[in-house]
Image (tube, rainbow, N blue to C red; front, side, top):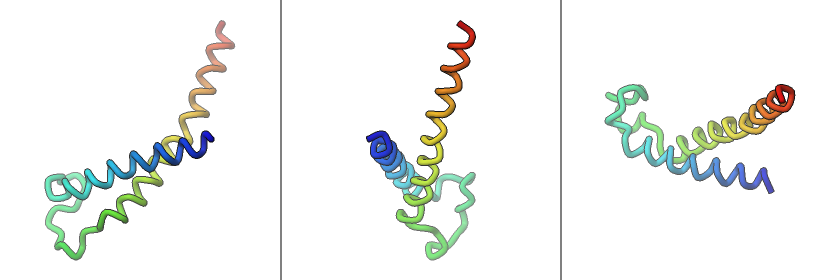
Length: 77
């Protein structure tokens, strides 16, 4: 159940992130894509897979970090 929720939330974040990147590709100089020809730019699917991997990595770190913080608080109390 938790894995399904994690994948669902990662997919939502990836869809929003990929759509934002593809719509703002020409305006963002920090992404390194200004001045590229249209054939050199990546599409929505590429950014969706890239962002999905990013969000899965972010969500897999939430549980261990929160468990460590909880254990430290229990030790402190």
